[in-house]
Image (cartoon, rainbow, N blue to C red; front, side, top):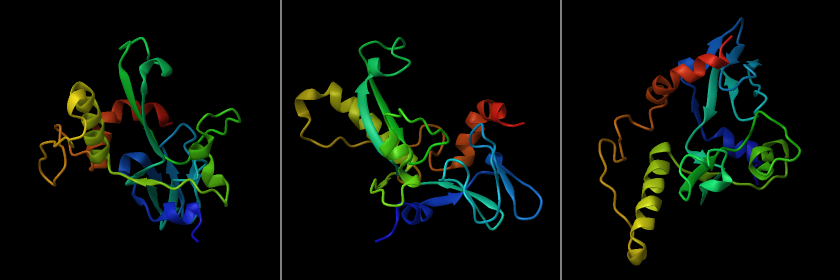
Length: 183
């Protein structure tokens, strides 16, 4: 049986150029979080899910550790839309190691060789489609037994102005926020 690390190493893709820089030799620096990890060839960052393969950053792709729809009152932004639902998802791995973490099973599972918290295969486009289905299904409570069909575009996915499967396009939207992680 494959370890969780082995399973996740197959669910990656090369990180967008904005997420990393080349250092001397085959070392790279990852800017995905505030740690700005210098990562030697064949090693992982502090998060345990981003790693250096062949002098390039590889990042998690095509899966989530969990998806949940909760009342917004459980979230730190509860004041924004009181009474609304919040669609949340998270990856496996984390760059923090909080002993009190309520998400330990997914955030720290990769540090445990015997962990059995399998990833759920899901693309960014599929996440958005699922969130929209959830929201629209709540509005149509009487016909919840019928699956909701969403109009799709392009490569067969919902495309609200940017291809959600294109990490470079998403990073362009997030660029102002990523600058705060760079030194």
